[in-house]
Image (cartoon, rainbow, N blue to C red; front, side, top):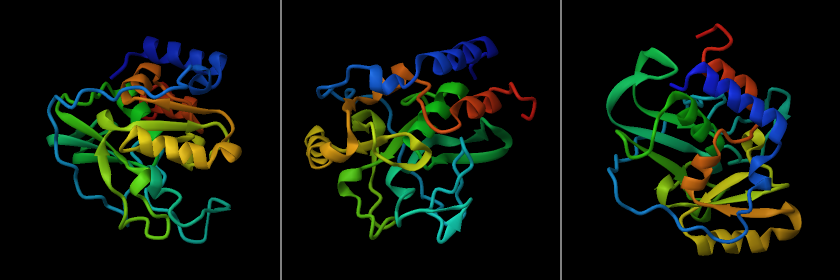
Length: 224
């Protein structure tokens, strides 16, 4: 886990620096990381009871009103992400719970959780993201196709609405990401493309309630 000094420094940077992904000049396509390194198979997704390990929101889009809001069908599933472990281990945020995978409803939630708890892709774990190019919101859970984060191209849209207001989607290819960006350039405002390595270098990533969530996971709020 990150020490408190590192987390406090990062929290200060989030407050002062503003939207880091918008400022980073990721205009062109970045090459994904090499395919090498260990790869743990993706684990089953607990759609009905699963909660995000970082923010504790459901990984499945709630039906009807939830916390005063109604979400479109498939809104949460399109950014589902997973950290699959090589072997079962205590969950970093809850050591009493032994897990073979951690589940997230936002790409930023996965990156931020891994950052604060010191988890790294390829070191006893593989990070997975949903390929938005293969995803059909009309059949959300059936069309979630997980791809290794290290091989994905990530798209950031300034005005794009996704869960946790993280503004990030993942695609299996740079071509698919560019085609999606072209179709949505009028609605999404500024657009950027990133490799997973760049997202990791920029972590922690901006998203809703990120300061409080990072502080909680780092034990700064006294409730761990």
